[in-house]
Amino acid sequence: MDRVEALNVVKQQLTEKRYVHTVGVMETAVKLAQIYGADESKVELAAIFHDYAKFRPIDEMRKIVSEQQMDERLLKYGVELLHAPVGAYLVKKEVEIYDEEVLNGIRYHTTGRLKMTLLEKIIFISDYIEPNRQFPGVEEVREMAFSDLNNALITSISNTINFLMKKQQPVFPDTLAVYNSLILKEEN
Ligand code: DGI
Ligand code: FE
Ligand code: FE
Image (cartoon, rainbow, N blue to C red):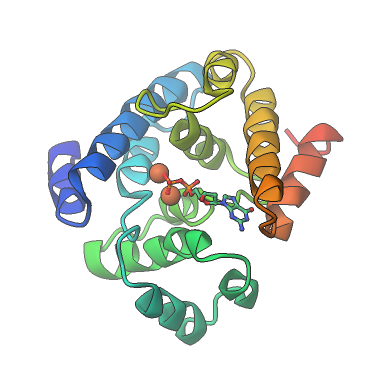
């Protein structure tokens, strides 16, 4: 599927604002793919579809998590987490994209996970730094992303964990796990 077709497909699923965000993620992710030597067309596809399920009804997403026997913890830690794994499922089913590397980029773009691939890291960080994002600390991560991907990941995850803790919201265990493993330099 080429870029124009993919963007047309995802546009129908999103609000205008979310579509603009998606284009920002796509452009950022392709730049990072060039710098770090990732597969540009896979990165582009994962970026385009990363928020595909963002506006699905919560009940529909919860049902898919249960019926498809996804990680049960997803139902406990906050509805914001659901659109990532459910998005991977729906992109496979409805858009007929079967590439597991691309689907994993979508699946883990919100929580991260241990041993993230280069593509997964690029999608995760592009989602955080794309040009339309404006929040305290984003500029620091934006600069870091182009020189030290893991450090950018550590800083963005640390910011997100702090944000969740300030609101006394739960932090998904895999998010803490990837933070720890990067801090301890247990992975590449
Ligand atoms: O879909 P986007 O808005 O582009 O970005 P996203 O997929 O990273 O979702 C961001 C939301 O997810 C934000 O409200 C914080 C929340 N979130 C991210 N990591 C975690 C989390 N929520 C919980 N409970 N635990 C996490 O580890
Ligand atoms: Fe998202
Ligand atoms: Fe996003």
